[in-house]
Amino acid sequence: MKRTYLDYAATTPTHPDVLKAMLPYFTDAFGNPSSIYSYGQEAKGAIGEARAKVASLIGARDEEIVFTSGGTEADNFALKGVAFANEERGNHIITSSIEHHAVIETCKYLERRGFNITYLPVDEYGLVDPGDVRRAITEKTVLISVMHANNEIGTIEPIAEIGKIAREAGVYFHTDAVQAVGHIPVDVNKLGVDLLSMSAHKLYGPKGVGALYIRKGTRLVSFMHGGEQEGRRRASTENVPGIVGFGKAAELARQEMGEEAERLIHLRDKLIGGLLESIDHVHLNGHPVKRLPNNINVSIDFVEGESMLLNLDLEGICASTGSACSSSNLEASHVLLAIGLPHEQAHGSLRFTLGKWTSEEEVEQVLEVLPGIVAKLRAMSPLLRSQR
Ligand code: PLP
Image (tube, rainbow, N blue to C red; front, side, top):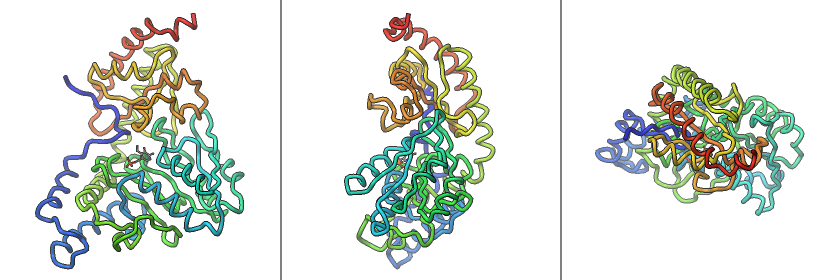
């Protein structure tokens, strides 16, 4: 059966050009970048080129990019790094209630270590109010961390406005831009961020590699101790093929992002419009306009997300009910609860995320099969019967 992959926010396939760029670094050019002979220097040079490509995708300087093992490590590094380096200044951190687990769980850990965390609410679209950020700042605040774009509902946060507030207050500002980088324009100076997390596998690069942008002069401690790699910020022999792949993916994203976003917005809106039209009791989650070009998240009343997912899978369609990490967890999504959905609606949500290889036909396939699946499930639904 032909498979229709509509879960690009969970991960993307590695682009063939990215794979091609990576392959030599597993074989002929396998050197350790710390070695001084030619093999080492070749690998070191490749890392330098990749760093420049990643930096230029987000308007940073090369030396402000530190490669990590992924988005989760970048988030951990930013939050713990700033918290522990600035403890004598204060112990208060501001974040939002819809962050990825990589941020939320790190904040919970920091709470256990004596930090106070403010989890800001969001509105019905998932937007953080910059005014709330300003009001939450105290003289003990050392860091604000608000994600650039939400992985479940696709809402794009007012990062530049929050950046201005953070700058005026003299507080460090981190954004988890894992879902934004490579998909929408991101410029660290226009956004006014001091730290920004990225992950290669969300933009057609390989898994297990990411980066943290660290603005020059930012005080943070490292938590990987050992060798002197990555400007002494992150010890361990570099993942050379992964970093080269990330660099190539960043280069491709820079070239293709504009046109690709337009194509995806057309497909996204076609799918949203089609679902709202062909199924009754459907609600769009997230902001209608301030959303990622590839994100569709809907709640469909009187059916369970998991049942829809399994039925879609039988038709060869891969989608998600929430973030990848929670798709095996039957608790309602904290993001959907934070935007005010009741538990039943949060459990009846579906996320489709489109990408480079998504075609018009695939969108039409969803519109053809989903209404039938919903009708079948509703006919068996105790949720619906209790409403009648
Ligand atoms: N932050 C966000 C917003 C994400 O969507 C993800 C992955 O789903 C991560 C962080 C974690 O990234 P990684 O899988 O590279 O650790």
